[in-house]
Image 1 (cartoon, rainbow, N blue to C red):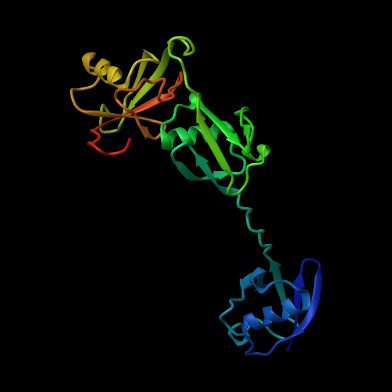
Image 2 (cartoon, rainbow, N blue to C red):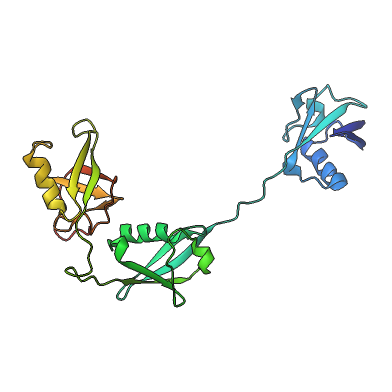
Length: 251
């Protein structure tokens, strides 16, 4: 029998048999119109014709029946914006996945998280050029797949070059099991160590007596290092959990 395929504002006739599978009709349409079978949906009076059935399963399909063809336009595959780079220190290196649109500042934050190097002490170089402007994308400097970024740590003369201490307004966020997830605003010096911070919270009886871990930007903080060393900035959140770091466990 002859049926009429209707697509958009066009119609064309096609010969089908009563036992012809729906998928075979789609194959004929692909040959006639070049529309991929996976993009086709056939229906009659709102009833979709399912690939696994034959024409005889649809008694509503008779001679000169109009079959509506809907085309599902397939989205092109997304361009992979991720690239693998190598971040090199003097004695070690890391393989990292970053976005092509990653900024220099964002990369420094990621390096700080995995390595602990203070952001302010990092100088990044690619092909002999320093990546100075933190708001610029890595791609603007020509960084691409398998590029090597070299990290130099600035040496700071504490007495002469290091800026004076400053006061930080920060928030200590407890876990949900501790003080019901309280937010504790604090004003402390950026030269205060994590140990100083813990003792302040305990001595002020803000936290009950116990062992605690402090987390900044997904990294466990070290007791004897300052907030400045950890890269804590004004307005940052520190997260506190009950627990300790066992000897030999990496920070």
